[in-house]
Amino acid sequence: MRKLLIVTGETSGDLHAAKVVKEIKLLIPDIKISGICGEKLKAEGVNLLYDIKELAVMGFLEIIPKLFKIRRALKCVYKYLLEEKPDLCVLVDYPGFNLKVAKFAKKQGIKVVYYILPQVWAWGKGRIKTIEKYVDKGIVILPFEQQIYKNLDTKFFGHPLVDTLRNYIPTNMGEVPQSQYKIALLPGSRKDEIRYILPIMLNCIKLLPEYEFVLPVASGIDRSWLQSMLENYLPADKQDKITFSDNTYETLKNVSFALVKSGTATLETCIMKVPMVIIYKTSAFSYFISRLIVKTKWIGLPNLITGKQIVPEFIQYNVNPEKIINSMKDVLQNRNELIREFEAIISLLAFPTNKQVDPGVAKKVANFIVQEL
Image (cartoon, rainbow, N blue to C red; front, side):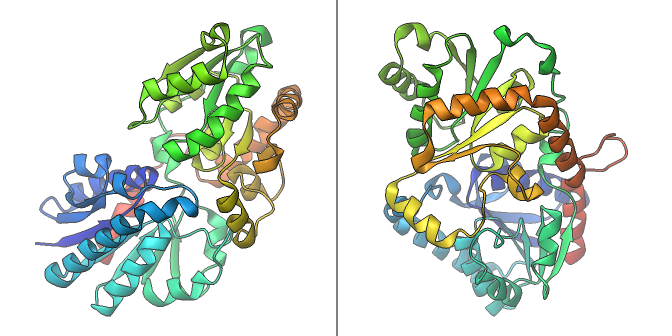
C-alpha cells in the first residue's frame, strides 16, 4: 500500500490540499494518507497526526505562546517519518514549519514535493538555497515564481483559487445604484488579525451612513464575540447596518465594494471582480520586524502580481478612516479601469473561461504527485 504524508499549517492550505487529496484518492483508492491537517483534509479521510487549529498564528510576537505546540507537532511528524517511511512527503505552504520537515525527510531518504512554494520574493530570499537543497520538486501558484527557483524543478498548474471560485459567478454589481451599494468587510479569519483590523473597518462605517455592510464569519470565530466588538465601536443604529454571513464567496458575489485585510482575500476579491481597499494592521512589534524582512513595495497580491499599485493600501500607521473612505470613493469612480486590471490578473492565473475545457488545478497537481509516487 502506498503511503503519503501531507503537512499544512493553515486553513487555506488545508482547503487547497483537501481538493488535491480527493483527486489522488480517485487515482489510487487504497492509498494511506496521514498528516498535519484541518477539517477539510480530515473530511477527505486523512489520518490526523496533529490539528492545525493548534498552530495558526499571525505576527511574530504572537507566535511565542504557540512554540510548545509547534515543537510537539514537529515531533509527531518526525516520528511518523521515522516509523512509517512514507513513499512521498507533500508539504503545503507554511514555510517556517515545513522547511524543517523537508530537511528531516530528505535525511531519511524520503522524496519531498512542495505545493505552494514559499513566497521568497516577498521575504526570506535566503531560504531559496535551503528549499533547493531539501525539496525534490516544487509547485508554484504564481507564474513568475518559477524564475526564482533556478535550481529546482518547478511546475505551475494555475492558482488553486481557480478551483475554489470556479462555481461562483460574480453578479454585475456595477449596475446597482450607488445608494443601494453593499460593502463587504473582510478583516481576516483568525482572532488575532480580526482584533486589530475589524475596529478600523467599523470606524470607517461611521463615515458611511448610506450603505449596508456584510461581515462573513470564518469557521471557529464566535459570532457573539464579533457582536460585542460591534457594540463597543458602533452606536445601535450603525450596528443594524451590518449583517453576518456564512460564506465569503457568496458575499462577494453580491456586494459592490470590499474593505479587505491583506492576504489571500485580496486575490479572492480580485477574481470576483469586486473593487476594494486593502487594510493591514498588527502589533507594533510584529510590524517593526516585518518591515525589516519584507522587501516588497506593496503587500496586496493584486499589486504584487501586476507590479504596480492598482488597489490602494493602508498599512499600520496609515489606517486613517477618512483617508480610506476618500480612497474608496476614488476607486468607485474608476471602477471599470480597475475591473480590467483584475481581468488581466485572472487570465494570468489560468482561470478557465470554460470549466469543461480545463480539468482544474487540483486534478493537475494530483496527477503530478501520483507520478512522483
